[in-house]
Length: 367
Image: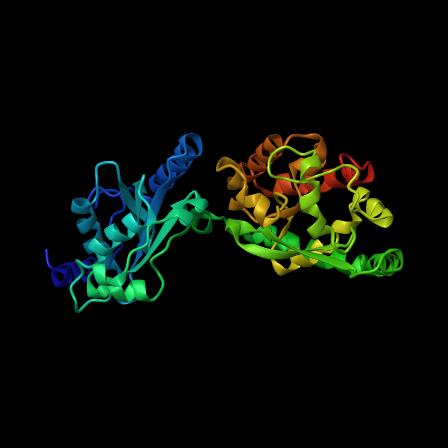
């Protein structure tokens, strides 16, 4: 069926195309389950996969474009591939054991079937696991058709981490609690902030605040702030202390860290050093409750299933903080984070906030 005829049909329907019977495509809920199953399979056996998303470029023709692409996909994919509706305006294709270059070949074949007088849909390729991107196969523009060459010359030939697509934004109720809680906390604790700043300046030379890049929701990096509790060149000295690491997994923790100042030990044991992160919460980079953000290098070293903690916004406190912190293994720490991710809700957030206060006062597992 020609594209123009499909366009006329779509306008007559004046409704969204059925999600469960067009060209055998999966509806959104089923497609998301299939993607989660593929992620779990990759985490278990290490066999990576890619995901293609196809989005119409212009709203006035999106229905016709989606109907057309749905029919093309039916004849283009392998038996092991899965295609479906990601949402109302996007199609997606799961390609097991396919690198980014192979996924773009499929995207080219599908998109270039669109008639020349119609705009190409917006195509993106996501890879899982993310570190597979480092070994992707690159193509040069002369090897492909002209319309695909335009996309490649614009720098769109690589893939993106899958976590960036399926990270969950903050619900409205959670963002409201964060803004109210962080705003009130910053206002009420302003005198304490001033006293701590003076004490740090007197105790050791260097800045009051320590700024470190950490992995946020979807793996996106952000600058996290803390009161400085270590000597100025602590990051440079870390490499010399790796052999003394007392935490399993990629996280780095030492009970008697020689880089920590005398004042810093008090700030850490009372968790006062974490209070500047209320500013990160107010900015939306963190939440009051959520998995603790790891430094980017430690986050990249996590196993696939452990990186699922990046599906939600990191936070100041979570299950790990109220159940022992440094006294549990890194794997158990991640399991606690995933338990929170699976059950995130108002009741759980408020409960964890209430449990955090006695945990801080009793200094459970603080280092």
